[in-house]
Length: 383
Image (cartoon, rainbow, N blue to C red; front, side, top):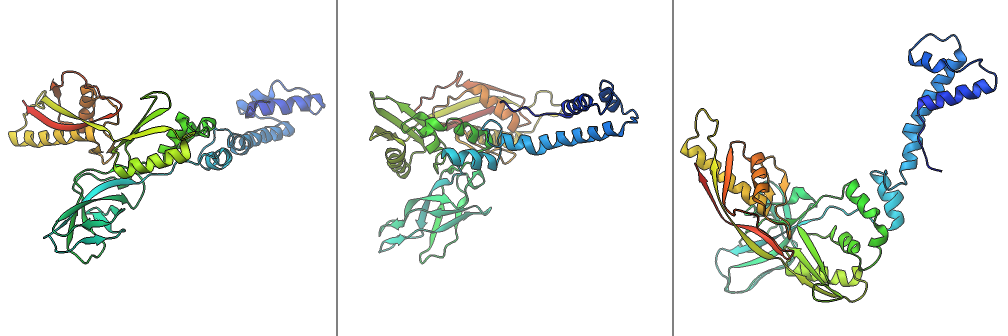
């Protein structure tokens, strides 16, 4: 039988009908309207049944229905999804992932012997976001710098950082090193929401089928350090799979390849891992901020607005923090660059912006599955 929650009217009508059939009351038709209109009722028995019906409605709403829905993937929420459904089908909720970033360590002067510092060396931004090294800091004798992969100490979006911010070495070292990240971090996502997790649970059969598209999707949901990925089946004939990871560092490609072959693929499939091909995006736009302004902006003010526009364009393409400190992911793998979407984004970010005309590109820029759009030469003309 399909479960249907009962409300006060239905419960009250049922108890009145039962009472009438048992001869406890002489009629039942008028009582619901009396109760609804808050009219005086001399029959205390009926009033008592009205209270019981109201209490029964609350039991349905607060106890019976939640228990029923807790085992239904369409309705369950929070821990009910994890414990009553996820644990049963063997699909845990994907947890928050960790952001990764490459950090360059630099010596003041070259030394006569190798520098070899084992992980974990802890680093931080001026705002207190911490990262740790994942590999040795190795600088050969005579060299002054090396680049090392680092991972955020805390998982989630809050640990994502922009370029040139990871500049403090918290661990005490025997040599004098400075550090800096030339690029923004990648990866760092929040734990799956109920709706995101629900989607996985509704496809649990496919996820548990090795080699399925859903099995690949579930695996990458918990993969640290990537912003996006693409899977291209049969890219070089039957049984071949192309996997593109952004950013696709050697460590990420090797880790994903080994895991996919051991945990996800149905058998030893022909999987080829790629980093994305970076497609440079040049922009030339003419901007007007003086439309409907009684007092036009000065040249100094326009230069400041121009700098903010350029910064926001880079956030739209490459990812970064918006003016309200929300992290925007930028263009993902295979996502076309569309000037109109950029204009809408800028309209929210730059309130002074009145009009923007794109002289280049005049149309959208196609980004293939294995490509990633990145900002290049951005020119803004203020009029």
